[in-house]
Image (cartoon, rainbow, N blue to C red; front, top):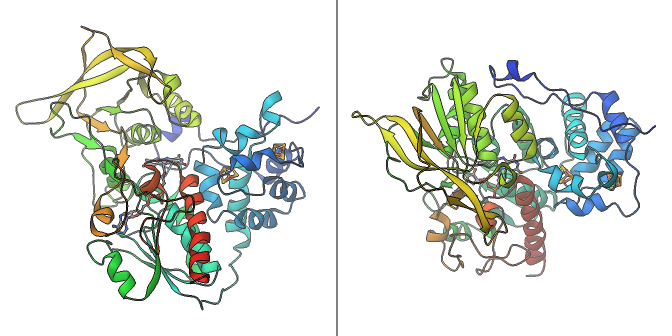
Length: 459
Ligand code: FAD
Ligand code: SF4
Ligand code: SF4
């Protein structure tokens, strides 16, 4: 009988809510081989069409089956420079795994888990350093060190360019370090992947805010022949309801940045605590909301309530994260919309007034729009409210870079290859699409790197 899809061992929910260690523990060599043996090695490999960077999935899985784990990791790295990250946070269920033929009859091959296994094996067991590349080409500047910028940087370095990444924060890797929490993506793993990119010859400068410290125009004046903008979508959106300015209301960006990047989770070892009530409401239904809710629980909140205006079916968060959040005891309030943050005389949050919703006709996105049920108002007694309803691009680069074409949403308009309206300037990732995924940002970084190479080769 063919093997079943292999489960991934996890920390039990009752344990993991007390720590920030990784929830999923990864496959053993044996389990990885069993899972790999399920792959039918389809000639047409439909799974590859679901991967934005076209990892050669059957080829790397064949190597896993043969026990050639480090070779499998290198096979993945031919297309994907951050496999340990993607193996953990890619929404595989709607990408590569959604097109696996085995999914039609039962469960698809666990492509993401195998990718994670290979990357972890290579990092821990073999520590393969990339072969040094001669840096003889032109100078290229990358703005932002998130997945889009890092991927573009890695590919351009491999093509021989002198690449410098300019990062506004004091640590590289964008959302991978300041947004996604330790229990889903350990910082040491991100650091190792950043190190890999640096070993390719990429120069990484932190604490440089392009648009303030130096402008895109000045980069060209300094001899950079092309610029890739991967500055992400780091500006939080708010609910615009009364009471949103009370003490105890955070944007998810601030809440997660203070916890992750400023290490509030490690207080008192680190001197940067975060104020948190016993009862916390998190507003939103995406990955950011799920990460905020589960972070609040681990920081010591006694009750964490998720407030989402649509039904669970419409939640954009990954299914696995929703399941994990439920196991951990997050209180799901679906079809519920906040209308007012309530505070006391000293200006601190004491509750979140909400109204119940029902689903009406589908909206422009195809999802059924929620409609308020009159008179259904109620108050959730909470001391902290975290708003996780989406992010928009930071306007700094668009405002300080003449010649770009900017959409009404503040994103930079580009063609299929990432070329902007200004010659020599390319862009990709969340600054182009609005908040999306790690792998789509990486795909954009790859396409732009190829286009920059063509542009610089044909001048
Ligand atoms: P970012 O990762 O945002 O990186 C942009 C970088 O540019 C940042 O480091 C920023 O500091 C820097 N920057 C900005 N402006 C400037 C400037 N002027 N000068 C210099 N540097 C600048 N996606 C998934 O696929 N799976 C998930 O599970 C998932 N979970 C998420 C959880 C959270 C909490 C968040 C916030 C996002 C999540 N995402 C997830 C989305 C994903 O992380 C993003 O789509 C992705 O990181 C976008 O990559 P990017 O390179 O475009 O931008
Ligand atoms: Fe699947 Fe993501 Fe790996 Fe591509 S990078 S094969 S989408 S897990
Ligand atoms: Fe293997 Fe599934 Fe891809 Fe076929 S579609 S090659 S079974 S992973």
